[in-house]
Image: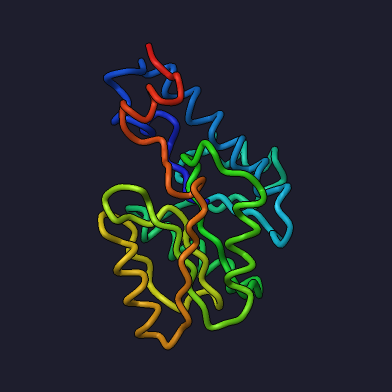
Length: 191
């Protein structure tokens, strides 16, 4: 689970949320996602990668593995976490952001089920911008990450190029991410 420093998270929500509210929301979303993953069958270990010491302490308080981010950017952070996980013998990885407010354990379990047999890449697409809102890679390190705009198409291409079976997880909870002011309004978060 990649996590930005609380002070830098959700800046696109500035038109509807003041900085203290965005910080509190970011913390709440991290805790909620940690709880969802802890209750999902098939999760052996939860890892949080961040450059924020407060985020890492909170992860440890929730019994998650805290990985200090050294690189710059999301994809670099995920590559660092993947290398650390592979060094510990973990075979598959599920990348889940913290901004999926409707995520439930059953959604995570659906994604895990789709990725049981390697080589496999399972993609949960964002409802807008063609992005990837969750990604399962089995085995770990099978592809390089390409998170960003239109990343779902690129993750598919990289999976196919690696000879993997590519699956799409269409669970609604993965499609909606809390990112823009209109998302916050839909959920009732406003100044």
